[in-house]
Every structure is written in C-alpha cells, then in structure tokens.
Image (cartoon, rainbow, N blue to C red; front, top):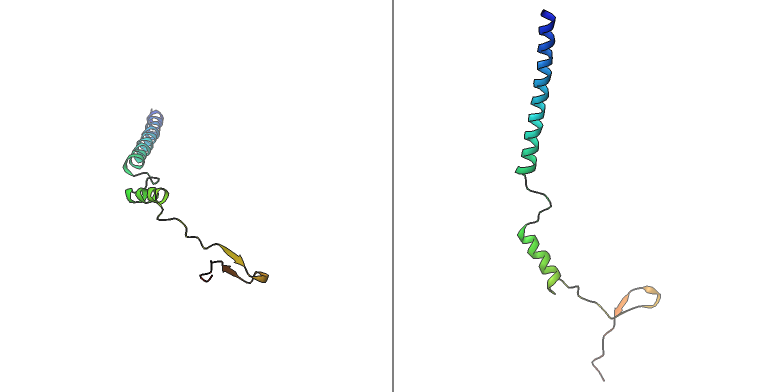
Length: 85
C-alpha cells in the first residue's frame, strides 16, 4: 500500500507542476500582450513631421544647376547668365 500512495503523490506533483507552469505562462502572456505599448506606434510629433515632409515645400532639395563639368572632369562649374550685354 505504501507503493500506491507514492505513485499517487508523484502523479499529483506532476499535475500540480504542469498546472503551475501553465498558469505562469498564461500570466506572462497577459502581461506582455496587454501591458506594453506596441513598438510600431509613432508619437504624434513624429506623425506631424512626416505629414509636413510630404505635404509642404519646406524640405524640398535646393538645386545647384545648371552645371557643367570642366575639362578632364576636374570639377563642376555652375552656369549662370551674364549680367553684361
């Protein structure tokens, strides 16, 4: 009879350990998925900046041209209209 109680206690411990592991994992998932913000979300300030970059001319690239290469590709020269007639 002693052997039967040992087997029963061993079986009960295995079930208790499995249940505890399940409850721990369930709690961990609940904390991770409900308590932390999603990293893909951007701040309102960043959102406004992105809209401003695409909707306004504040961030347009300033042009350098028209430009021409010097002989032998030693450098570039900006071509400008002469003020003299």
